[in-house]
Image (cartoon, rainbow, N blue to C red; front, side, top):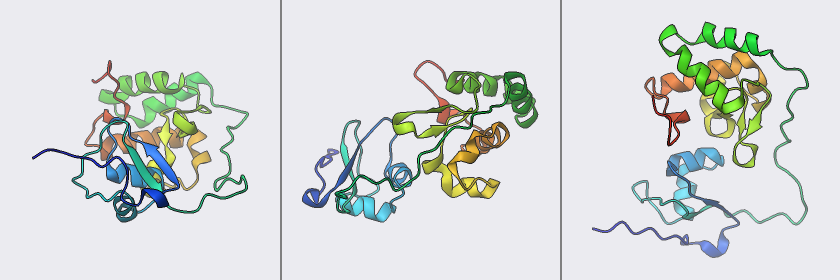
Amino acid sequence: MSNIFLSAPVRAGACSSFHSAKANDSWTRIAARFDVSLKKVLALNGARTSTKIMIGDQICISDAPVPTTTTTSQPAIVAPKTTTKRNEVIAIIREIWPDEYEENALFVAQRESNMIPSVIGGTNNCCIGLFQMYYSVHKAWLVDIGITEPAQLFDARLNTLAAFTLFKRNGKSWKPWWTSSWRP
């Protein structure tokens, strides 16, 4: 049986917004990232959860009419002018992460943000703070630890707590921060 993916969604004429599939994308992650129900993403693409996604596939994420004026649905996230000092960041990471994980946590924070809590990065400025947390993908569970707005991730303590929570949610795995050259 071959894995055939229809790169053009069944309702391609109605599609107003596409996402170009990246490594580790899944139907669930795409739905969460763009705040669209899984059922809708699958319907827009004539897919099932078992349908393979290949890097570069164009995934329909919206059939809403494209607005004629330039408005943004979300206010821009603005980094605070003041930031936590490096030695304070290190102390926070050492406080929140258990001893056996803190060196890797320090490495990840250094690599992701140079230990600067006000960093905004990633594609379309998706990722925030020390551990470059992807708010729109994780917002459903971030509320459980008191994070209800993306700007809260500029707080070094909250970002570190969010990262440690993500680590635990992934079975104590560093997978959310893996790169081709770093997998502890």
